[in-house]
Amino acid sequence: MSELFERGAMIGAKTLTASLFLAVVALGCVACGSSGAQRSPEARQRTEDRLQRCPEHESDHPDNENPDAKKTLVPAGAGSALICLYRGRRTAGPSAAPEAKVLHAGSSRFRRLVHAFGQLDPVRRGAVACPTGRPLRYLVAFHYRNQGDDYVRVDLNGCGLVTNNVLKTLFYPSERLRRILR
Image (cartoon, rainbow, N blue to C red):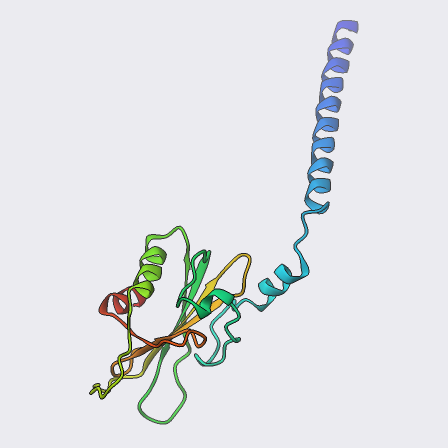
């Protein structure tokens, strides 16, 4: 009987030791997670300002505050993109709700999209004849970890235009860009 009691005490001591060890590890994780790992107020504000879902209209998005967007249509370093599709109508009445897709930086479609934006031809001055078509527009919100989002508007009606509203150059959408956005 005493041998059984000693075994039970040994198992109980091992269980108590393991439980104490796990409690210390858990408390250590909580302490590490809440110590200095908080984001700066600016980083928190950028996350709060980030476009989380498609606005009702493609023009209803925050201003483009990414400082590098003045130099290039899509600055490097985006972590994800929210693609909002707006299908317009030729007649009066309510428009269809926007369709949304999210692409993450690791996906091949995301890489192809960024590359396609980088390969666009700028709009040339002069007279151009463009067919009219069914209004089709996209708003692509590129999200960055340490800077403001970059909003790129793609209008595929007629010849189409691509802009981020801060870069002084307008671009024609390529057939490659059109295929990737579909």
